[in-house]
Length: 521
Image (cartoon, rainbow, N blue to C red; front, side, top):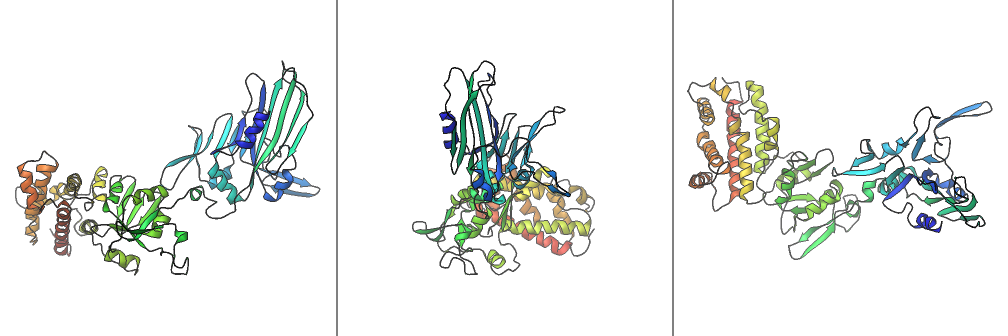
């Protein structure tokens, strides 16, 4: 049995997965045994380790009524040892089975995927983690999660082991007893109880694992694995200073970590860092001054500057998971005289209300307010609300993160769908006298009749031409002429699209100033 004792000492409970229960029987009857587990109060641990036997057997440790003379009371656990996997048996009337301690499941917020025989949880970034896996013959738990529960409950772990091997023609030896700080066991020989064998050798004992102290880091399996990246906080691209975004290492306004960089130290990134979030609109939402990972995390950002994105150093460590920090780090740029936008400074540092500066953010804010107010006043929409499958066009509309044709094309398509393709032709036809089916001409006539001076036909017509001659079809000379009308000079797509957004915003504001004062026909 030296090989089994070697496994107990070097491997049992030492790897990623810890066995809470395991059947060790062999089909031919030559070996039988099992592994089991429980939690124990640290105050009782020293006494427990002086006994080599199991302190808790399968099926024991549940709640019970206890009587002593005339006294009667209820005990949540009729044993001082808490089983992590509970064996349920019904005296042969029903099939027995195992279940995981509900307190453990609730604390770790585990979902029971019974179809695939596992308990899972989503991490802070929405990635599914298998925490407990099981079958009819074993239950195992991920060690980091078990350690977090032990820390929270302030209990030590006992892993019980028992293995019997049946042999023939083997000499018997004196019984052996071993008592240690971490492992206690007995090894002994006797007559076999399995047909076809003469003798058995048995090892029975326990192995101890101490819980960590109870603090915020130790009681969360995610905190245990949390890492913090270093970001550039000063200097330029060649000579710069890096510092960890770990909030516990940063200074604040209350005297914490004097001499260290402040929690509110601005860190700058290329605007391309946002592209990942725009491209996955079902998972993420980029808003004015924030990014949301739906259901998981939110980080404050300054996305009102045209050339960079800014995030406070402490927010990087507090609000986004480590893997996300690694992604952001690849876009990190040195401060080199950069500043946060006036909007973000007023909001975050002065606690004041401030309108968006970015052309994309300003347009989206004005457009949403316009749509809401228009319907309140007129009881119909000038621009039809997007269908559910097209809402991502508005959510992901943004100033270009790079001066690239593909991004320009996709944003033109989105803007056209939000505006031109959504013009409410049916309602407009009821309100103007011209016989026209073209949406832009209908809108232009309606606005002119109501005193709007903005030349919408030229502006929206040019935008439509760009979509028709190049974005939605093969490019040719017509596209070059159309793009020139929109003000694209020397291939400056970023500047051109921001200019388009600004013109669209000004148009919406002018229409609102005139037609949202009082109901019109």
